[in-house]
Image (cartoon, rainbow, N blue to C red; front, side, top):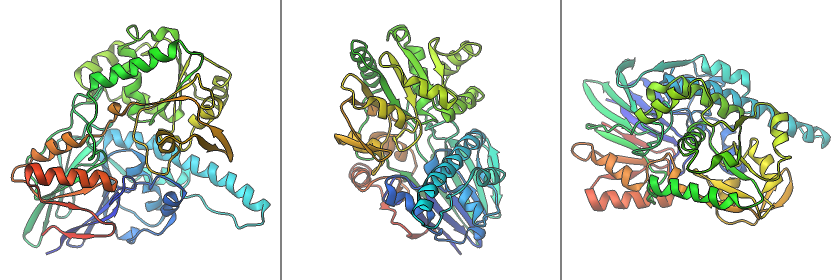
Length: 465
């Protein structure tokens, strides 16, 4: 009897989620995400997969974030021919995100190859292209929550709402081989309770083994009320200044939450005094997908979205689709709130806005999400006084605000509570976290609920039978 799981990504780190489940002769991937961080981290994406892609029978994708979905085009490019099962909203978001990633890959390689040609060096190839992304998207099968699907012989799947971003899923997998059966639950990325816009993460009662994320396993978030008050305080503080507010935001999830909070508090926060720009083509498309999936919102958000279905959520919101519209924003010296990607300041239009603003003391930078090691955003949060933008060293003089309480990831207490909803304290393997976060969560689970906790190691094979 063979039922096992092997950890090939997000083991001892946050990004690159990828785990292989073997059930007899069937091989199933849980996620196939991009490794993010510094140059050395991202270079690992080019390496061969530690398995033969053509041997994988199917993939189940927890959600659309690129650190979970971003190597699917590469998987197909290198030989995978099976289906990719995910929630229908995740499928729709991946249509935007994977094509965008392919486009950025092409542009980056085009730029790099120009320099290499001038130096007489060999040209390099993009990790994957827009066309590769389109081919991968042809493998996607959209599912719904709370319905069982037999996806392979001996493998039954049910998705439940993880409450992290639109379409994010907890996976329940019933695995059968040789007359034996095991139930594996993979948390994906868990959200928080009472988050704006989305429903709460669902709890699962039974499992033989749990694989759980631990991104914020070493900290407790501020309450929503305190975080929203902190956001309001930043806006009030900046109103009397002479600069702009930059908000690097993830295109999917964080951007829509920020827009919702601004709409809900528009008058109380005096937002009519600002020009508000959404300067991210991907975030604009993602927001349109959100409006098509209001049935996945909580009651309060759904009501607001319906009320504003024929008008913009914010009367002074300006949508910047084209490069020319984006460049025009940089002529504004004060009074602008600029929401742009990428969320970790590693690419996208936010870098142009950083170049024009971050050296100005009167400007404000608001960090609202997780910043991985090696990213520009992490360096800023850690207090660097200079960043490099297009080979130019730029001084960090703007006031930096980190509002950690807006995170869409569960904190240590919520992760513990979610795990304790299982009957009988099943074995739990921690993934998707840095070493310090995993250790802190493991210690608390051991100490408070006597959980049998294991930390996944890269390449480790774990028998579930």
